[in-house]
Length: 281
Ligand SMILES: Nc1ncnc2c1ncn2[C@@H]1O[C@H](COP(=O)(O)OP(=O)(O)OP(=O)(O)O)[C@@H](O)[C@H]1O
Ligand SMILES: O=P(O)(O)OC[C@H]1O[C@H](OP(=O)(O)OP(=O)(O)O)[C@H](O)[C@@H]1O
Ligand SMILES: [Mg+2]
Image 1 (cartoon, rainbow, N blue to C red):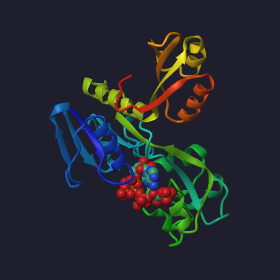
Image 2: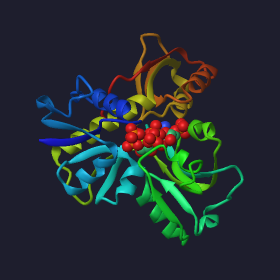
Image 3: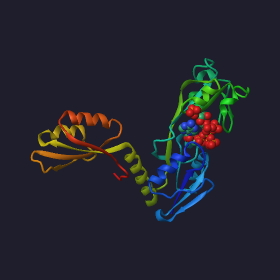
Image 4: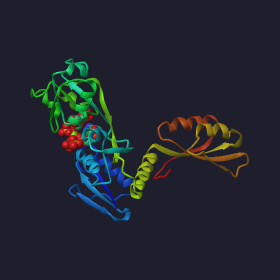
């Protein structure tokens, strides 16, 4: 049985449940459920704090989990990223009162508040900067005003939280993160785990691609294929109308309107775009 850890709180929770549910796994009915058994998929889902997920997976008590890449690094657990999941994107950055510092080198000897002490500690060591890391559980942005720290290192997405307390980012981003599927470092992939990977990748492709269908004169098929090369090559079928063919191909969702324009320019007709509900490549 596949034992899978899913965030039960925080920024990744909803999107993690959506992607798993689109991949055909059973979901919890209310937010108090901590374990869900999914006999159809021979799987057990454990709802845990995102910060703890890499620890369970690293220990080998759970086979796989969804957490943030930043939390995986921060934990130092022997777990590894297997599939980036395309949601929960954030950067991890330094912030301070506007203009106070311009880069990590300015922080030598100062106090930096963060809830990612592992990640920050490794970064400072890498850069050869000796600073004091003040570990807080959350809402670290307030630490400067309360005199606990000179700078903070925290997750920034829209920047709204920082703006609200009058802080500004400085220096290079420390890390870029998104939700990732993880497994224990070096552990073999079981059948159940490989099936999970294929299903998640299928959902990601279904989100990123659309199906395009159109009719075109047979003599222009090479130009058409150059515009819509598809995955393995487009399906080209004869049309009842002499000298015309029907073409079907997957194209990236982003930019599909430009593809439609280009096809129109070379004389394509009846150009249809439809969503892909699910797929296995
Ligand atoms: N505003 C955000 N937008 C996008 N991703 C975010 C945001 N805040 C956090 N994350 C990401 O979500 C993951 C989990 O962080 P989150 O803040 O939800 O956990 P937490 O701090 O343990 O939970 P809580 O904030 O409920 O205590 C991290 O990988 C983080 O990078
Ligand atoms: O740039 P923004 O879009 O404002 O998002 C970033 C904020 O979101 C997270 O906070 P969260 O709500 O998880 O609270 P926490 O600090 O207590 O973890 C993070 O710690 C930042 O504070
Ligand atoms: Mg948080």
